[in-house]
Image (cartoon, rainbow, N blue to C red):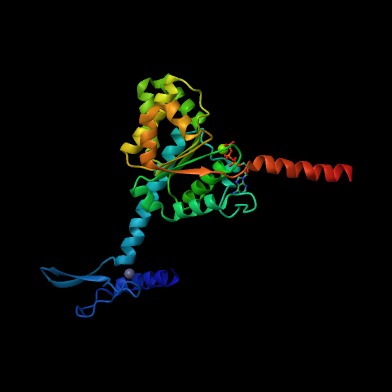
Length: 279
Ligand SMILES: Nc1ncnc2c1ncn2[C@@H]1O[C@H](COP(=O)(O)OP(=O)(O)OP(=O)(O)O)[C@@H](O)[C@H]1O
Ligand SMILES: [Mg+2]
Ligand SMILES: [Zn+2]
């Protein structure tokens, strides 16, 4: 990177000298070896003009992509105001991952998912993590979200209750149009994470909304990650087979068999308390 920056700096200086007449010896970028000038035939003769080499084009394209992503994230934050991405959430990172309590299989899965995110996104590939309460599902998705957000990838992570309530609120204000506004806004997220599927109120309307969210995600060919305490059978039973079959198509199903970390942490805390108070 340092070499690239130095070379680009040199090019900036050189561009002034591109007025030179030596068309056979157009200066080249030290990094990508592409010429940084181009000869243009003018009525008054040939002239050498500056030209962006591969590195420069890459920097320029990355900058455009970055600006686009920032814009998308801003739109997401505007529409999905009750997401879970607060300070507590921000602490759930790979760096802070506690390997004594966290599940190694999940750690690897999270790392690989982030590493291969471009491929995952292009393949519309998500995950569905199911398992008992307290075994690190939310921590797992939060660490993925934080890592991707750090790379300026637009991500939204929202609890299923929050999401269905947000949509319901929007419907109350704007009618059906309000539902589509939120569903469309979710498309700004390269990755949508719905935490705790099944905790939302269970009725015909919420079930239909969950179906629509999944179907929209599938149509837009964008990935979705879901966590839930529900068993597979329960998912099929509650949301019907159409929803389940789409989830199966879009998500790797991972069962988190880890034990309840909350219980473990509670016991540790109690032990410490007893030690301090009674001994
Ligand atoms: N890898 C980890 N490193 C450090 N702490 C963790 C890790 N995984 C989970 N924890 C902690 O353990 C507790 C329970 O984890 P979490 O909330 O992610 O469980 P969950 O599976 O989402 O539970 P539920 O199904 O009830 O939503 C939290 O306090 C969380 O911060
Ligand atoms: Mg959770
Ligand atoms: Zn170059």
